[in-house]
Amino acid sequence: MSFLDVLNKNQFILPERYKNTAKNVMEQKVAEIKKLLGKELFIPGHHYQKDEVIQFADTTGDSLQLAQVSARNKDAKYIVFCGVHFMAETADILTSAAQQVLLPDMRAGCSMADMATIHQTERAWAELQSLFGGTILPLTYVNSTAAIKAFVGKHGGATVTSSNAHAMVNWAFEKKERILFLPDQHLGRNTAFDIGIPLSQMAVWDPIQNELIYEGDIEGVKVILWKGHCSVHEKFTVDNIAHIRKMHPKMKIIVHPECSREVVSLSDDNGSTKYIIDTLIKAEPGSEWAIGTEMNLVNRLIKEHPTKKIVSLNPHMCPCLTMNRIDLEHLLWNLECIIEGSPINRIKVDEETTKYAVLALNRMLNRV
Image (cartoon, rainbow, N blue to C red; front, side, top):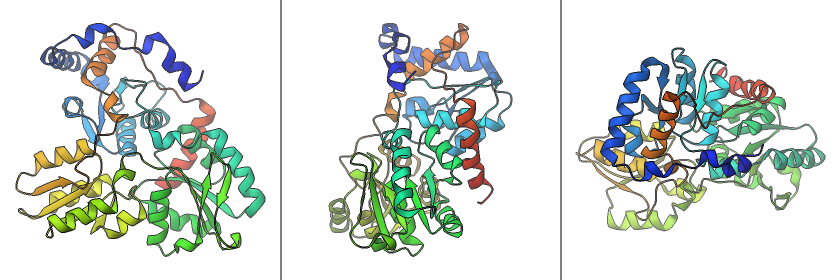
């Protein structure tokens, strides 16, 4: 069954009664169910989730971190993953068969992950092999589907996170002459540039046109960047930076490396979500910051650091739309279905895909 087929099934449509229930009543019910299920229930919450959901999270973090914490929690029978689809897949890959990973809303996908399908990737690989032979090692950002992780694992590659991308790209170049970086071209470009690969040696693979975009002799290509991006981080622009420099000359700008090369190069600092959070924690009272990342997290950092002036780099930025599909209503519905003995929205990755995806993940975890 395809992902679209799953979404079209009526069982995944939120019952009307939840839309008419007061927020305080839903909060009370969620709290009661958490107490009732005790250690059998574990709720990991991604940093980009709404506050109404984060308040019930047993732990918060980035996608891989949450999957790893879930895997270590052997007491949890039900892992209600408050994030997006690929994150829940990773949690299912790493957890035991006795544990069920559930996603509150099956519509919570990731536009970046969806920009690299397994069909597109296999087709691209065949074309790239004809151009470059066996000189390429594939790497995929953890923000990708289980199928893409498995493809990379099957072909000797590994996953990367925004925290360890530099180490993993260096590792890949120890193995092969070239790399294919999926699915986020911006993280790939920024990382490769940081370790000394010039932009002139980077090509872009367009999965829609099924072609390599590059000017010059292709023998000079070292990095092949998949033409994908984060729909949130790509909205931060050089104009946003120019505005901050003009209106707040003392303000430091820190962005996520999923932003474009132009934005990253003009910022004062860049790093993973954890890096951004840690930087703000360490920052001096009275310091000023413009942050280029998801709005729910920026708003949370503003609340948590009242002695610091914090703004979004893009004042018109909206929260991640797919992350925001996880709300209090869907969380309560998911938990009540557990209590009723009919858990819904289970994320289950098949054994073959799991086998090779674990290879890709372990190559990263054993390297860094």
